[in-house]
Length: 514
Image: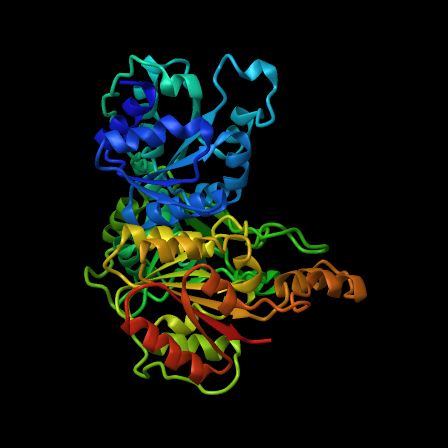
């Protein structure tokens, strides 16, 4: 077999059976191998930013990596924004990047680039295959790296002659590195901090936001009075009725600082020390008071869930999850869009066991607290801050979880970065309801202008304006092969959303909120 075929067989042997692709000439032998080797589902994305976004969403829900297939350095460059987001979410991903044949690189053909340098900027593991005989082993090592720890980005660069060269050998499946255990001394020290009774905030990320981790953290908080928070953006979180109502650190800097007022200890579980999203004149970068102490219970590569469960038992916390839920059920609100009113309406109509991909930006700021009593769901967000994430991530999540309804809440400006994902949803007949908030302005940038102490004026207003001409999301959806509707009230949205959730297949709702 040739190198490309050995790579496809190696990926399948390593339980990688889904590939999101936007191939070019250098990848044609990998594409041809898909015809020879059954079992690999190959999903076409019409832009590389869609491909990497799909692989991110797939990994978050499937709990294993997908492969991407990208064309040379420029193709990898187009994918980097969502590879960055995936890295920030600890999503495992195996990028296969075709490149010029080894003997062709010296001629500086138009697509020649520092592909390895681009890959190292966003990858935990990078390798360039040297020959066809090594491709299979390189592929197995890439999967091993991707599946190690909390999840990593592995990028294998495949020169064209190593793909078409004969003598390929299927790589043996390699065991990924397991998560490390937290040292007993660390556990005892954190338990002592919690027993002190001093105001404490526990910040949870990664697996600590899934059901087992949340339950253990809630037991600890109930036993000690510690507060719980998530980072500003979560990679995946179990939310809704029956799950602990843990709020996130606010995005707005003043609100974030207020959330940590009076806190003397911050305990990190798979999270970084809470920091402002950006630097702002006259405000600190770290959110906790300067006099507070920060303690690391578990780093991202450690088993934070086990550490929380040990801590709960050590502190004598109740074994059962004690939740006090609001007796009042969420209800549909009528009238024009307003963030909290939308959140309350959304909570009332969210379907059971759905997946919510939230990239609503300013329109989604108020969503967390009002949706504590929504139907049980998994909530995904853009953890890296590079916009153009929502549509692709929702697409990948739907492929990973075909039996679950996926809801994508997408800001209109950010949605324009990766709207080609709608085409993939239509092509694959995925069960996704896309809700686009059409405020027709880069509203978040207007807010940031004020936050850094600058004053809005004619030039800045022009740069942030998306209404000249106005984006028509119904026509955009139709051009991608998707049905849609337009609403401008909360009750109109509720009707359209509930109707869309009763049917299968992709649909788009443009919510005009300008």
